[in-house]
Length: 343
Image (tube, rainbow, N blue to C red):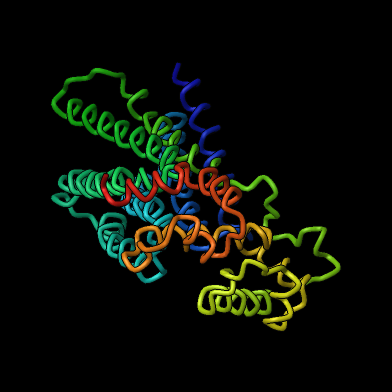
């Protein structure tokens, strides 16, 4: 039984390492979000590796590895919370650091200093910290579920499952301290494997099957762009789209946009595809839908019909707009408007 448990932990640890490498090397999507997911997977790589060592060779277990594994728990709650709110608030690096950096203090104290009182109280502080972040994540999910159902319909169950598993794990640990042993020690140690399942679900959901792992895609080998040039082009594209509201032009095409901003069409398409994992038309649709969502709740736009708001945001066809809105948001425009107003 013990051998089966530590082999399972080893397999799951390898999976966590694979996901960590995937997100740390991922060239597409939002870099900050990739880093958050990489941090989550790295935490579980350490936790599962420590469990594997503890079960397979308890006599050679490293105290340093044990301390590090225990203290990476500080970063799981904040990372999950930041991941959940990213879809709506898109926090920047400063906000992310504010939520993560303070926990380096208890991490360093516990790993590098021997303080018996600290060792006794720190598990309770750690559980309290994670509980607060999970509560905030769940609250945010519930509050935004109606308007962002497409995202939260799968993110929310993952957070709920993780929260329940954390509560069960902590409860069993407390009972064991009072010499009430419901599960054998080895199984309790392996509980981290179950905690990893919701995290893996999030990780694999976010994975891009066409991810290049930082390697230039074949279709762009003949038109390579340096990282600095790609960043410069992306900033110019997003600035013209968002500040000049060019996406509201119902006749806007890749060729006309390229001419407007002075960047060749092949590079406009390439930068949007590589940086945002979207085609030019998908990028347009995304910007227009976000604009419609804001205007549906804008008091100054209430004199307009939904079709009028859609047209103002760049949609030339009402039927196509209704189809795209329902497909991407999970609600019809009228349902979204009513729910946002609390009806």
